Length: 120
Image 1 (cartoon, rainbow, N blue to C red):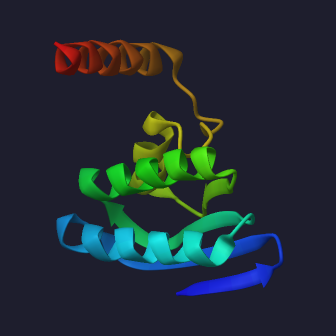
Image 2: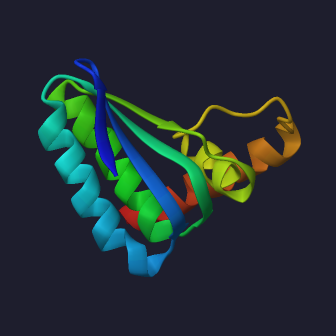
Protein backbone atom coordinates (compact mmCIF):
# COMPACT_ATOMS: atom_id res chain seq x y z
CA UNK A 1 0.00 0.00 0.00
CA UNK A 2 1.35 3.43 -0.95
CA UNK A 3 0.23 6.49 0.96
CA UNK A 4 1.25 10.13 1.15
CA UNK A 5 1.63 11.12 4.79
CA UNK A 6 2.63 14.71 4.13
CA UNK A 7 3.88 16.75 1.21
CA UNK A 8 7.33 15.47 2.14
CA UNK A 9 6.76 11.72 2.75
CA UNK A 10 5.39 8.90 0.60
CA UNK A 11 5.17 5.62 2.51
CA UNK A 12 5.23 2.18 0.88
CA UNK A 13 3.88 -0.34 3.40
CA UNK A 14 4.97 -3.90 2.61
CA UNK A 15 3.38 -7.00 4.16
CA UNK A 16 4.44 -10.66 4.16
CA UNK A 17 7.46 -12.42 2.70
CA UNK A 18 9.77 -10.62 0.32
CA UNK A 19 11.02 -13.67 -1.51
CA UNK A 20 11.87 -14.36 -5.15
CA UNK A 21 8.17 -14.39 -6.10
CA UNK A 22 7.65 -10.91 -4.61
CA UNK A 23 10.51 -9.02 -6.22
CA UNK A 24 8.66 -7.95 -9.40
CA UNK A 25 5.73 -6.56 -7.39
CA UNK A 26 8.10 -4.80 -4.98
CA UNK A 27 9.89 -3.22 -7.96
CA UNK A 28 6.57 -1.99 -9.45
CA UNK A 29 5.37 -0.68 -6.08
CA UNK A 30 8.61 1.15 -5.43
CA UNK A 31 8.47 2.69 -8.92
CA UNK A 32 4.90 3.91 -8.23
CA UNK A 33 6.02 5.33 -4.86
CA UNK A 34 8.79 7.31 -6.59
CA UNK A 35 6.33 8.51 -9.24
CA UNK A 36 4.08 9.86 -6.48
CA UNK A 37 6.97 11.24 -4.44
CA UNK A 38 8.28 13.82 -6.91
CA UNK A 39 10.73 15.59 -4.57
CA UNK A 40 9.48 13.90 -1.41
CA UNK A 41 11.07 11.27 0.79
CA UNK A 42 10.14 7.62 0.10
CA UNK A 43 9.83 5.46 3.21
CA UNK A 44 9.61 1.69 2.75
CA UNK A 45 7.87 0.32 5.85
CA UNK A 46 8.85 -3.30 6.51
CA UNK A 47 7.18 -3.59 9.93
CA UNK A 48 5.01 -6.49 8.71
CA UNK A 49 7.67 -8.31 6.67
CA UNK A 50 8.88 -11.58 8.15
CA UNK A 51 11.49 -12.64 5.57
CA UNK A 52 13.51 -11.06 2.76
CA UNK A 53 15.45 -12.64 -0.08
CA UNK A 54 18.39 -11.34 -2.05
CA UNK A 55 16.23 -10.38 -5.05
CA UNK A 56 14.19 -7.99 -2.90
CA UNK A 57 17.27 -6.62 -1.17
CA UNK A 58 18.58 -5.80 -4.65
CA UNK A 59 15.31 -3.99 -5.48
CA UNK A 60 15.69 -1.89 -2.33
CA UNK A 61 19.31 -1.08 -3.21
CA UNK A 62 18.22 0.00 -6.69
CA UNK A 63 15.55 2.16 -5.03
CA UNK A 64 18.18 3.74 -2.81
CA UNK A 65 20.34 4.50 -5.86
CA UNK A 66 17.34 5.96 -7.70
CA UNK A 67 16.61 8.16 -4.70
CA UNK A 68 20.17 9.49 -4.66
CA UNK A 69 20.13 10.23 -8.38
CA UNK A 70 16.65 11.76 -8.31
CA UNK A 71 17.09 13.96 -5.26
CA UNK A 72 14.64 11.97 -3.16
CA UNK A 73 15.08 10.97 0.43
CA UNK A 74 14.93 7.21 0.98
CA UNK A 75 14.48 5.22 4.16
CA UNK A 76 13.79 1.61 5.05
CA UNK A 77 11.96 1.45 8.38
CA UNK A 78 10.40 -1.07 10.72
CA UNK A 79 12.58 -4.05 9.82
CA UNK A 80 13.17 -6.51 12.66
CA UNK A 81 14.86 -9.85 13.24
CA UNK A 82 16.49 -11.54 10.27
CA UNK A 83 15.10 -8.95 7.87
CA UNK A 84 16.85 -6.18 9.78
CA UNK A 85 20.08 -8.17 10.02
CA UNK A 86 20.13 -8.70 6.26
CA UNK A 87 19.48 -5.01 5.62
CA UNK A 88 22.11 -3.90 8.14
CA UNK A 89 24.74 -5.78 6.13
CA UNK A 90 23.82 -3.77 3.01
CA UNK A 91 23.65 -0.46 4.87
CA UNK A 92 19.93 -0.01 4.18
CA UNK A 93 19.27 -0.09 7.94
CA UNK A 94 21.44 1.34 10.68
CA UNK A 95 23.36 -1.20 12.71
CA UNK A 96 21.65 -2.23 15.90
CA UNK A 97 23.13 -1.80 19.36
CA UNK A 98 24.12 -5.47 19.29
CA UNK A 99 27.01 -4.73 16.95
CA UNK A 100 29.69 -7.43 17.00
CA UNK A 101 32.89 -5.95 15.51
CA UNK A 102 34.72 -9.22 14.81
CA UNK A 103 31.76 -10.69 12.92
CA UNK A 104 31.06 -7.39 11.18
CA UNK A 105 34.66 -6.91 10.06
CA UNK A 106 34.81 -10.47 8.70
CA UNK A 107 31.58 -9.95 6.81
CA UNK A 108 32.81 -6.64 5.37
CA UNK A 109 35.98 -8.37 4.18
CA UNK A 110 33.95 -11.18 2.59
CA UNK A 111 31.63 -8.74 0.83
CA UNK A 112 34.59 -6.70 -0.42
CA UNK A 113 36.31 -9.78 -1.84
CA UNK A 114 33.08 -10.93 -3.47
CA UNK A 115 32.59 -7.51 -5.08
CA UNK A 116 36.19 -7.57 -6.27
CA UNK A 117 35.67 -11.04 -7.84
CA UNK A 118 32.59 -9.77 -9.73
CA UNK A 119 34.58 -6.87 -11.19
CA UNK A 120 37.05 -9.22 -12.89
